[in-house]
Amino acid sequence: MTRSAPSMPKNGTIAAILPAAGSGRRFGSHQNKLFATIRGVPIWVHSAMALLGRPEIGRLIVAVSESDRTIFQNDYTAFLDAKKIEWVLGGQERTDSVRSGLEAIGDDAAIEYVAIHDAARPLIGDPDLSSIFAALTATGAAILATPVTGTLKRAVRATPNAAGDLIANDRCVTVDRSELWVAQTPQVFRLDLLRLAYDRHRGYPATDDAQLVERIGHPVAIVSGSSDNIKITHPEDLRIAEAIMARLSPTNK
Ligand SMILES: Nc1ccn([C@@H]2O[C@H](COP(=O)(O)OP(=O)(O)OP(=O)(O)O)[C@@H](O)[C@H]2O)c(=O)n1
Ligand SMILES: C[C@](O)(CO)[C@H](O)COP(=O)(O)O
Image 1 (cartoon, protein in one colour):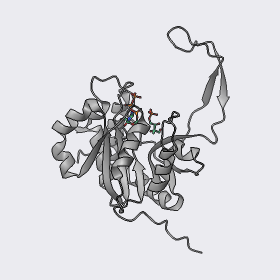
Image 2 (cartoon, protein in one colour):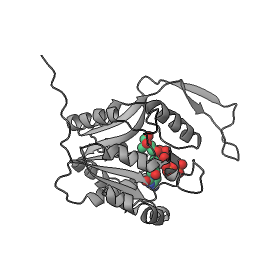
Image 3 (cartoon, helix red, strand yellow):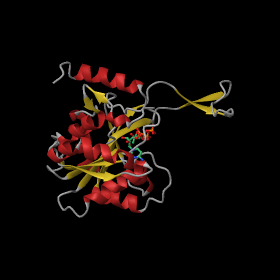
Image 4 (cartoon, helix red, strand yellow):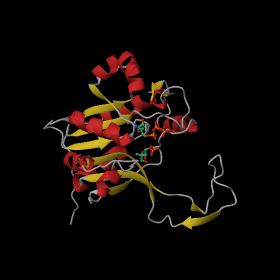
């Protein structure tokens, strides 16, 4: 029996939301880490262009912080207009930023699905996008993730010192990693499903959108993704991203 190829979302039926309203605290720069460049292109632009290159994406909405609003309005207006990128004001939490993006979709009858992709993940590649979009039509909710490598330890009886550091001589316990994955983005959902999950969100912390869908009892599928799809979190991640990009596209196209 021949297995039929997984169906892909029809062209233009996915709204992409790019959360870009974070403070970049761990990056430690005076400006938003998303304006740091790789090969002269801002991180958030790499992320946006990766999605805009896909026919399934009908709209792209970037959530920006109040403090970055002027930069986006002054430095990126021509780019936003040319690429038909919409922007909304993000919020205190990542979920607040995504909620703003969801509200901006409105009652657009063309949009059936939503893809939430961190603006801080500039190296998302087409193969992973194809995999996650194929899973979307089959499941209604799916995330890219990578299996845990290395040995995981949980610090127990850790008694943080005054500086909040864990004291080195505390005990550790090995965690079974066989069922553990590190979530990435895009995280993709049927639009009605994610809207329901956000309607029922009562503010309990959630570092990704899948958690909200899990909480309403809908299964979220895991799609194994590339370890190249890193999130720019710390300054050293920029060097890693440059090396990955040099390997993936040796010439500066
Ligand atoms: N209130 C927030 C917090 C985060 N993000 C976005 O969510 C993505 C992933 O978040 P993270 O890497 O944690 O970014 P920051 O929150 O900026 O980083 P930090 O925790 O170091 O401040 C980023 O593109 C970030 O801009 C957002 O749109 N709104
Ligand atoms: C959504 C996410 O990329 C999944 O790994 C991640 O949780 C967002 O970044 P943060 O560092 O957790 O804020």
